[in-house]
Length: 336
Image 1 (spheres, rainbow, N blue to C red):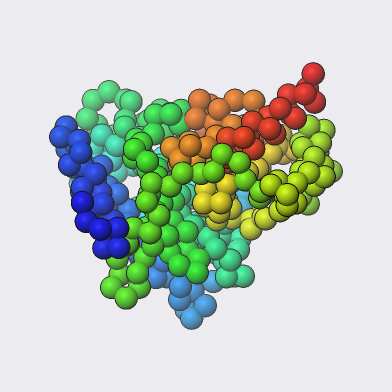
Image 2: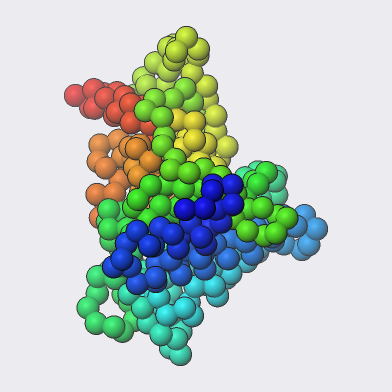
């Protein structure tokens, strides 16, 4: 295998494929195309302040969020990059109300692509880190024709690959195909993703907790008690630290690297929270679990939840195993 310093994303994917003689190469091709789409989106994000791409379009998406111009660019870029390769039977995006069919003149494949084209887009105008999240499944519908809604509404444990891209001080792509979690940083000098984080393992316990404490008075008692406990306790002789960016992809990326916990609970106003099970929570949970972490809704493993709709929301507690187990303990005790 090539040295880590010169390990590009394409080479890493292809060398990983050689470890599985039964592989057809289709999944490798999909990941390479997603890498290309990420480069195009990254380029546009990095020049957003120089062109007419900031601001709102004047419409709202299916989740009720105001749509920004860069959301639409990312959404359309992913569709154009992925709909013609012959690998997918159907796709779905957080920006679309219904499933996205493969054009009639293109080959139909056996895979399903679900994606949030630009997570954290409310932060675009403030130049805060945002990202793309994607999730890949195999179809469950019979035949070789167009895919169906059922193909998109699978439990998260059926994912064959998932990943995200963070557009921040650098552009980083992190993915798993079920055999470890690997991160690649885009080198702007020659436009290629280079391996920068090999076989990522999340610490068993961390010092950082990430949650929007502005919603404190809308939380259930168990979560309030947990936050009070953290504020009154030390980890390895130091106080716990609150860090909240407001872009799930950026908050979870930090949690993956440093350990700790990211939380977006339900509350009195939104019983199921804000984050989407299909587009955000399932892929991020798959990645965290593959890195040795834990992801639940407070009571149930996220990857075991069966989606009932494309835009279904769920509470989520994700991060280091010991931190997630502890918040679950507080939540259970408050229910007793």
